[in-house]
Image 1 (cartoon, rainbow, N blue to C red):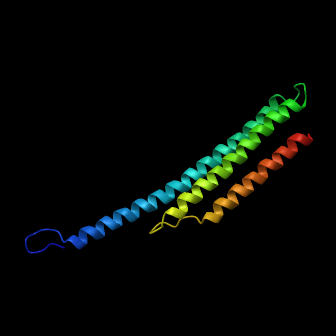
Image 2: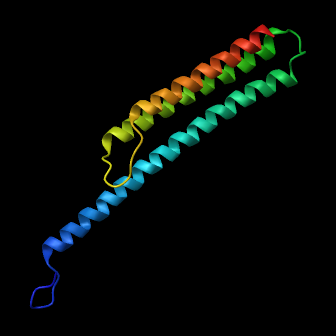
Image 3: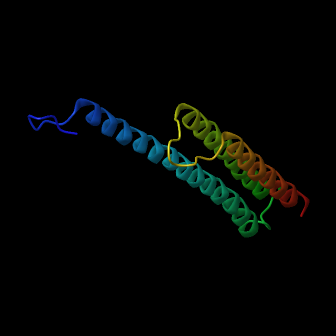
Length: 129
């Protein structure tokens, strides 16, 4: 609103500033989720690299060497999954959602757990073949 002299009301300015801050916080929450998804894709790329290395060097001697290298990449993938979960959880807890519906932190934990279990299963398959 404007007062009789034509200047904006201070309360209106403060409300608009609060709205902009709330929207920025919502954007940050959504960016955090996209970043988490990006790190999960990076971890899955490490799993794919492990499978590819094992497939390419599967007949190499000694037999344990390609399996060990593949296992190293699986371990890297698990570290990536849990690092992403920890960082996403920290950011999610620091921010409040206003208009956006942010994912709860326990879903980050669930995703990291499922992806880690899958990486361990891939490792088991690699060592038993």
